[in-house]
Length: 316
Image (cartoon, rainbow, N blue to C red; front, side):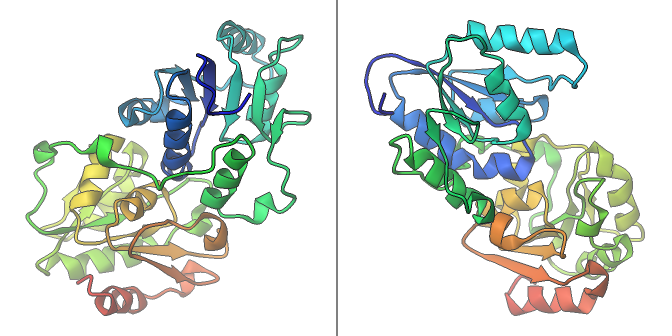
């Protein structure tokens, strides 16, 4: 079956996370939507991204994956029932992880849908042996090519444009995203150095706006200490809100994290801090104006280095 056939089919797209990967998968999702315009598309994702992807208009309905743990037999049986009852003709696995590979096995004993991904024996494998050395966007573009989808657009944030006047943003502001995965502290710049950057920006015409999830409220509160004009939005924004905060910012500064993927995709001038813990060749934020500031260890990155990069690029 070619992706452009016009007979009605049932399609499943799998994209579970994380935030940056979800943002970069918006282009492939839109390509699948366009190439299956006469088909019914179901998107499987996790609770954290349900609202965002529902707003993206890339599917007809959404399944929230509860991600059953290894010994959760009831959870696995429920997930198997959901997948088999979907009667899917084709699955686009944009997660391509050990977990999503396992989901393919839940269709046993059949019938099995066509499968785009890396699971053994699938109908449309992404068989490039160098796929793990490709940037996420190029890797998924090549994966879809094997299914007959040859045109993959850049991620589109237009569906997320909303009025965010309730956030009471300053007239001119920059977005600061100091967080990231709790278990990846080597990807985070020091709290004290973020605080010094924010203190300097606090006296400039471009007020700093701190962004992050509820788990980063304490971090952002520590960074905001002693400042008068800073706006701390940690834990107060949905992901749709965050898109609009990013779009309105004069520039964005942060670690290699999801909010910085949003800022870059919004074509906001972005300064992203990288250590040895992640490789921008594989996962860098993509946009019209992205500056990667990299050190082997972020402990070696000074406040002056960051401020000089921002000043040189006309960010402040």
